[in-house]
Image (cartoon, rainbow, N blue to C red; front, side):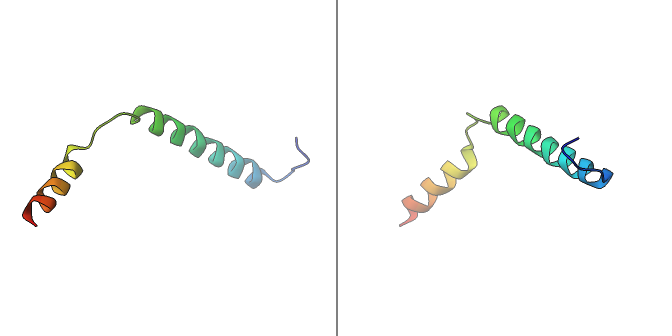
Length: 49
């Protein structure tokens, strides 16, 4: 398959594909989540000045 005989290469391809799927899932799952801590700290710093 693809001219690759070494099983280590298959494992590397599977690991890369698994990372791709995980990153897609993680990005879609947290797409519109607001992080209130960052907004509060920015406002607190700007109001102290």
